Length: 456
Image (cartoon, rainbow, N blue to C red; front, side, top):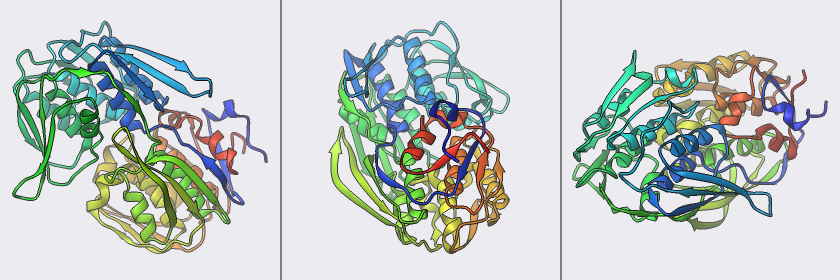
């Protein structure tokens, strides 16, 4: 059956069928983590910030809406090539204004936690909320360190949204050691530090993605990174520095590239080129893991763009073997475990993925959701504490299940990839969450040979 027309693929159930092969060159949407930060830093900048390659998913549009309410003027223009360029006229550090209405962050978990950091050291009051999924996610690990600046928080039961922030009038710097690895918590603290006099330091026992530090440096914020005597990473920021608007390009999102990448590895006779993908060392855990499993992935044209390492990824069909994935790798690939589980289901032997506790507090309980969906598709799966164990047979599973995505875009995309190789079609109950991070996913995949439609 031919794929349905593009507009029909953005909501409702989707069905994915066996794909003969995938071929072509493509660029996935811009990096979500960097897109959030680009809008925020542009808001803190004086003058105009110009952003190319911004992800235009719902999460990022929610952050753009919040920045407008905090005083930034944000406009989008189409280029002659059909791409878009975004312009942000910032208000400067210390000049955020009180929003007129509640800041609705939709499903943007990164966005809401980083905005809380921005608000924490400005003497304004704001209420944040989100969709049903976001309002179930705990915020206590962010509010606890931000309160040490002097901010006050009134949260719903269980430290959840809706939540009201009253920013500190006289914020004080702090030194904070992350109890668990989290780039979101680290970044919220660093953003709060921008309007705090003196030096604020975040200590990381395990390094996490460093997009915030790189973007700070691009905007001229004094950042010092060093190792402590205990071998931990300390990131120090000097606050109350004036930022000047900059021009930047957002690389293609490695978390989004993971889906066509794994699809190409698993489908027969496939050869893809994924263009301009970010290869920040704190984001390449999936590539490292797949290579250990036997994947043919090559990095071409490696380069630096706006302070971030970028490359084109050449991917060919590969026979994969199960391995043990250490817990220490989780911070560099926490969003990629759902699609790694699909790869493991098609590999030869057992893959054990350790240290996945963080997956229980994502858009859904991803650990349980992936395990249940894989079992429904005929895969032998076990969950032992925070370890996901997938027993692969060296061939694609039966499939044939309809998987609930539970408002989680990554679960949805992972099972659509599984349907490309399984014996029977795999369907998901709702495509709409995919638009939050990968708008046009089904259309793009069909363009390189997939068969994803809205008809059974």
